[in-house]
View 1 (cartoon, one colour):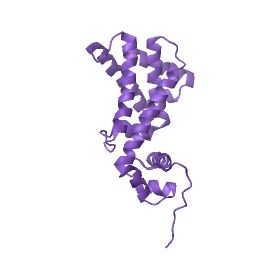
View 2 (cartoon, rainbow, N blue to C red):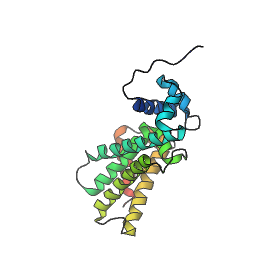
View 3 (cartoon, rainbow, N blue to C red):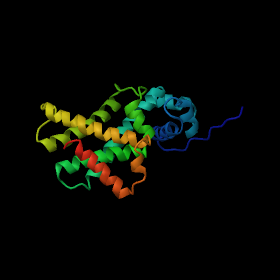
View 4 (cartoon, rainbow, N blue to C red):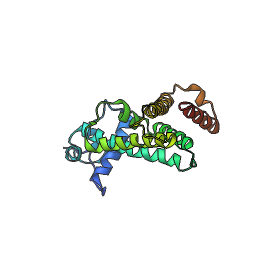
Length: 200
């Protein structure tokens, strides 16, 4: 019988499956995602992903968790160059939010718009909570009080999140037509202004 698999030579099968999973997700979308397609991409038996992740939802949950970790890195990377003013740090975090969505749209939508990942898995719950806590801390720094104890500050959390997410989703959907004709510097200024307006 013909065999289309290649011998597996990677040092870390789980990491290789996650990389292949993200590639399959980007190419085919979440509805066509399957463990078999991921296994074929890596060159292992179709049972190999099941050993690590259980089923397709398990692999998608691990992918979403990894996505949230990278998402947090993207926000912090923007903040590293933002200076120390609380509003600048919050705006920079929002720009990192948009950067991530634009660089990995399929993963972004898996994280925020799909019901296939199992939100109750500890890995995904922890990664998602860390990303949310980052936003809460940014607003707490700006307002000088915890959003968890101050309803007005929690409203700021929702406003900042809504603005960043809306801009990210509109951007990757190609709906923000004016942005497409802008030079990078002009686009950056526009997005900064919109983020700052959410808390004006």
